Amino acid sequence: MTGSGARILFHAMAVGAVMTERPATSQGVIDAVLIESKSGRQAVRGRFFIDASGDGDLAAWAGVPWEKAPPIDGMMYPSLMFRINGVDVNRAGPAPWRTVERLMDEAERAGTHTFPRKKPIVRPQRNPLEWRANLTQLRREDGGAIDGTDVDELTRGELIGRQQALDAFAFIRDRTPGFEDSYIVDIAPQIGIRETRRIVGPYQLTEDDVLGCADFDDTIGVNGWPVEAHVAGTVEFRWQRDPRGYNQLPFRILLPGNVGNLYVAGRCASMTHGAQSAARVTGPCFVMGEAAGTAARMALSAGLPGDAIDVQELQRRLQDQGAYLGRTAPEPIR
Ligand SMILES: Cc1cc2nc3c(=O)[nH]c(=O)nc-3n(C[C@H](O)[C@H](O)[C@H](O)COP(=O)(O)OP(=O)(O)OC[C@H]3O[C@@H](n4cnc5c(N)ncnc54)[C@H](O)[C@@H]3O)c2cc1C
Image 1: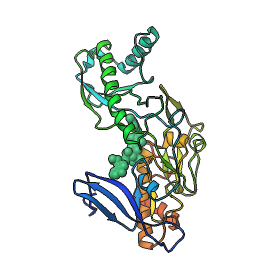
Image 2: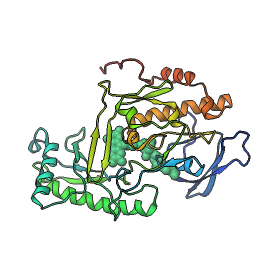
Image 3: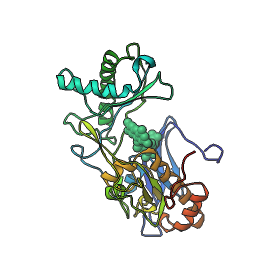
Image 4: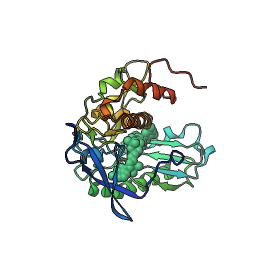
């Protein structure tokens, strides 16, 4: 990024958008993003914008239609992750992550413990002394998922997340062979949000596209992750029906429809709740980010709105950059 000449701005929060008053086209045009930081309130003006906020913040301020699943029986639950260090690898045995899940199930059946979430992901890192723990589930008082676009709910999530991390760690340390002298080495600096706003663009990727491994003429890359739904109390997986195991991602999921100088990339792109439960993970988010950046450059140099660029040329550029569009069998990893 620094090598490209981009000006980077850390420690700044986008808080609003200013639209051009009378755009030349029927689509809205963003003139500036308002930011707040230690330097005060400022406006960053631009000719093209990419909303990769995860929450579709800029899109929402610019008037792009969006949807959000209901907190109860809908939106996926967030988690606060932490890492454990000081594990005795020899005492822990060959597959100790299974032990943690078994011990938790046994404790629940015995009635001694109730855990916020089943299916813990407690796994060794590259250095096996160190383990990552993904097993918290952050709820509102009514049991619904914490909403990552509400500051009060985010605050509650930070508080209960830390309590859940401490409780879970104490259980693991006290019961799992090899963890007797372990300790929490760090807790994520903020809770991890899985789902909030998703824009509703000209095409919404669907769960059926994911499970049926759909192809699209305007492919920009692939998603190879199944549906991983963080529902109340557990995690549900739904796997692709086709052994190929991946779906293509269409360029159209980046398009906001009614705003001409904006792309929306990442977990807030135009996907249904079911599709987002798969394509929200990092691989497809990389795909969307690269395509949005490449396409924005094309739109800017051609002086065109974001939805009017030459998609075949975009695909050529992405392939030249080494992107995999999912049209040929993937090359084996060596
Ligand atoms: C607990 C947890 C575990 C996960 N585990 C995995 C895993 O093992 N493998 C995997 O592939 N995926 C995993 N995921 C999913 C994946 O990490 C995310 O879905 C993905 O990173 C989303 O990418 P994104 O670019 O859309 O958003 P993000 O990665 O969230 O990036 C958004 C960025 O925008 C910034 N931002 C947001 N709003 C503003 C604003 N208003 N102003 C300024 N900056 C702003 C944020 O600070 C952030 O840096 C996990 C998610 C969670 C929550």
